[in-house]
Every structure is written in structure tokens, then in C-alpha cells.
Image (cartoon, rainbow, N blue to C red; front, side):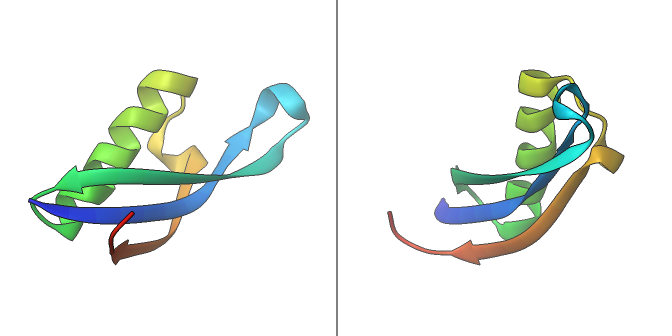
Length: 63
């Protein structure tokens, strides 16, 4: 398992269609799983579909 930092934006329609920034710190096996988990977490927490989530960067790192 590696540690990944995923940064991006999601469209917050409840604030007037503004793109909000987010950062997720994940402990995942690889980068592809980190992306999928980010979509899953953001979708379940904020009720968003994948087309409303933009991932800008995924990097391995320590936190």
C-alpha cells in the first residue's frame, strides 16, 4: 500500500455552480485505485456524478 495525495475540483451546484477545490489523502495500492476511490468518496459524500469531479493531480507522497 502506498500513500497518495489527490487534488482536484468538484462542481458545487448548491453554491451557484462554483468549482470547489479538494484534497484527499488516501492509502491505496496504486495511482489508478486512488483515482477510483476519490470518485467514490466524493460521489457518496456530496452526491456527485463523475462528470462533476475533475481530478487535477495524483502524486505519491508522505503526509
